[in-house]
Length: 180
Image (cartoon, rainbow, N blue to C red; front, top):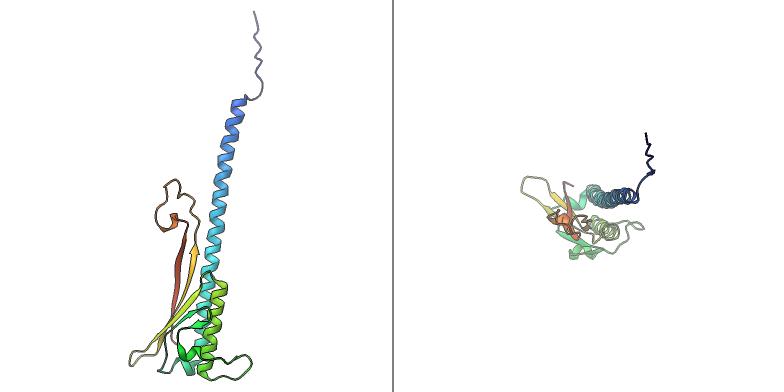
């Protein structure tokens, strides 16, 4: 009887190339997931900062009851350190170094808050709109506005649709209501 000995030992070159292709596709998928995770962490950080900044102004408003609970409130837009309200914007006293009136303190608080928004958030600015209905306490809506950029992983393949597929910056707003 004749014994045939197989001379094949190990993997063929084709099997090795296919294994490398499968591994490289898996690594690309992991890299994409990592990029998306980093982007989502950055978005969450900015959203948290916006919420903290709104709460910071709310506490400053509650600390300055003498201004924020009177009936002559002006609505303000805060962009950086420039206020759209002429009365509050005219306050130039540094309340860290000198005693301030309630109006001066409100102007100081809003200028500091606006400067922090511009520094901490991309395209950050804010708005305070106070209203009073007869017989109810004054209510102020604090809004923090910023630009948020997302990562669009599947935009080229057409598997994602909507705002998240574009990979462009979008304006985001965090709002809270406070009664000073």
